[in-house]
Image (tube, rainbow, N blue to C red):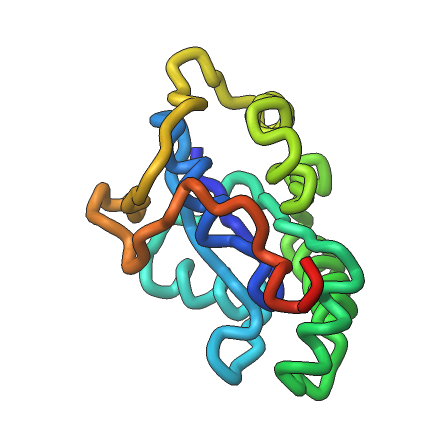
Length: 172
């Protein structure tokens, strides 16, 4: 199954890509917004992939974060637009234009993942309709997710990350 992992503003999409990629039934497509200074819409990615003959995702995992971290990120990064609003509008436009079934969208809270990793991953696999029978829940260290062609993705992931919001809170 091809899964698009989509998140905004340093939401740990790379970590989620790495964790989901460990399931041999899943192939990952990654989208983090903004990408550099560019805000890329799902419809744009969809059309590019379709035009170039690249596989389209079957389901989408939206990586969510605590609203306080998003607010801090909006202020620190100076995006000029609330990225949470951008994400919401982007999803609505994509669903409407492509008649994408909303039941194929799974929301994963990064804070919940840090607190209850195994349970949240099990629930995510269940919602995606993917077997987790041979999933290595205890894997640690660095991991290189694979792209749709089975080659190492452009990023290495530290599976031992415990929190991605500390940079926004000095007293954590």
